[in-house]
Amino acid sequence: MTTTILADRPALSTRRRWTVLAVCALSMFLVGLDTTIVNVGLPEIGRGLAVGTSGLEWVVDAYTVVLAGLLISAGALADRFGRRRVFRTGLVVFGLASLACAVAPSLGFLVAARAAQGVGASMLSPVALAIVVNTMPDPRERARAIGVWASVFGLSMAAGPVTGGALIAAFGWRSVFWINAPVILAALVLVAVFVPESHGQRARRLDLPGQSLLVLALGSAVAVFIEGPRIGWTSPAAVAGCAVAALATAGFARVELRRPEPLMDLALFRRMPFAMAALGAVALFVALNVSLLLNTLYLQHARGWTALATGAATLPMALGATVCAPWSGSLVARFGPRRPLLLAGGFVAAGGLCLVDLGPDTGVPLLLAAYLLIGVGFGFANAPITNSAVGGLPPSRAGVAGAITSTARQVGAAIGIAVAGGLVVGVGPDGLAGASRPGWLLVALCGLFLLLVARASAPGPKSAGPKRPDAGSR
Image (tube, rainbow, N blue to C red; front, side, top):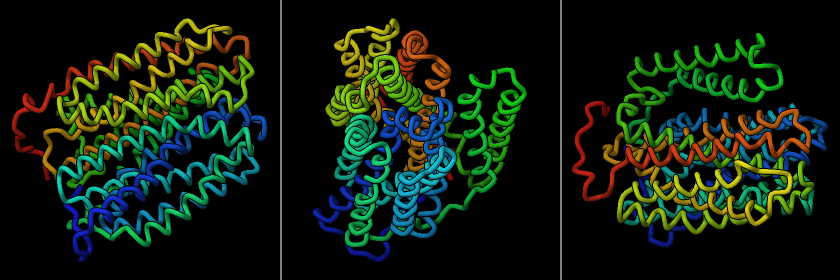
């Protein structure tokens, strides 16, 4: 990440700066919403397109894998060609892909359109955050803006199933994609009117070999997770997929370590707080997406709930995330990341443990309590994970660290969907509750891992110590 400047623009007024934040947060809301809004509609999509569970997982993961793979490159493109320009391009691509999803005649078409959505989304999330940071010159105001940003992101992820359930009940599954069109049009107008152009003072080179290997590694690994239960873990195709994933990962590491300007600065992983924060981001989003998909399949297939009722069941999760995300930001500012991470890990673990004995007739109060606990944990986790990742780094590397953490979140989302779908593929309604129990145990283990992330993080602002120069900074 390079130092940024406005393109020959005078300082913006306070009202204009916060308007820019609102416009960029709107795009972030769309990116997060489309990561989870489809979950509750998967059974309806399956019935409409006559496909099974393993195929439906690709509807979600085609989006998240492409988004994860292109996030960092999108930031480099924006540095070079202009953030507003790339941001507007992302909005157009995302909007057109959403329309393609809405009219998809087959599963293959829908999956391809979802991948195109991921391309557009990759140009929105990191670029919009860079615009916000560049627009807010005052550090305190910038910190408040990033807190709002984190809150919007948490809300969008948690609100997806609720929104999707309501839309599907009223207008059918295609409406979860049609709804993007008016929002995109409004965002394009607002960007043209309010958002200034900005560039990097020194644009980073694109790392095409690293980019290709990263997408190949992620795609092949997720493909094995999704298709392995159906084709057999020891089948030639599954073994070949594992080999491709391993070779692509090894090749990616080799290429990145040798490039003067790598796509992903692997030297950052030598810092224990950063490495643990990145793994914590993966674990958090594995837990969230396992919870959302298992909830959808269990309630709709095993218990016969409608999409609307299933979405409504996640309201406690959305409420917990909405209330606790800004609270977490305040705790990080006052005490550092350790305390909110401890809270996040405890709540997520407790939520998963509530459902490890899930049965066909588990009481609704217990289900809602579990979803609330997971939502509270999710709300507490995002701000301290980001803080742990970038804390102690010079500004020249903090942006890259944040981009890697964002990528880790999407990787966790893709893995969570693949794992949850693999647990229940081919299982009938009567066996869904039992088949999903390992998934809830995995959610609890992810929560416990967040406790380890908390231990590796700085205990508080006073004990964090002065920043030391990073020998690996470029």
